[in-house]
Image 1: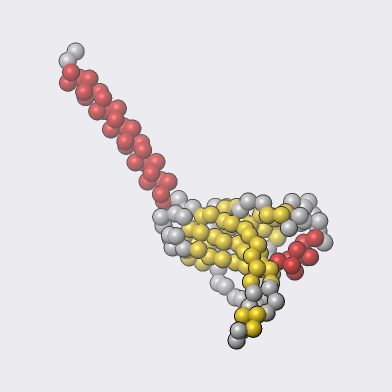
Image 2: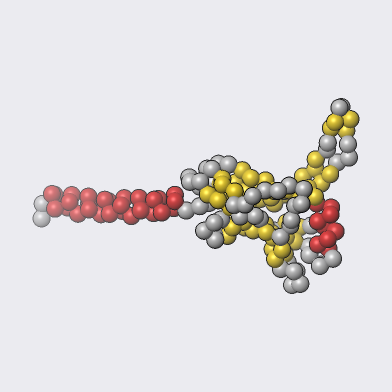
Length: 148
């Protein structure tokens, strides 16, 4: 057997590996990818150099980390309670039309007043919540657990 034969086998193996890797990259890049974060922030209003009372908010931050434009539905929540496992929070002060399109790298934030939410959820013995985001292809993206 000569060197040409082994070179051809080596080239065939390498090209097959590269082909499989390119197929994987192609599929992986087309999938929607979101990161979902749940955090507590404080906002203090300042009007005409007068500082108001600080208000605490629960913020759901959704980031499109994929390479394509994706649409998301309104965030919902999962709790650690057996009474009320899944729930939605309706914001009556802001009207947002879902689904919302997120370009690659774009961020969408959804915030709810924290103290009111904490008091209402404590009635159902809820101590932890997790944000759930669905895209229009019904894929689910979850945040980490957040302790109330």
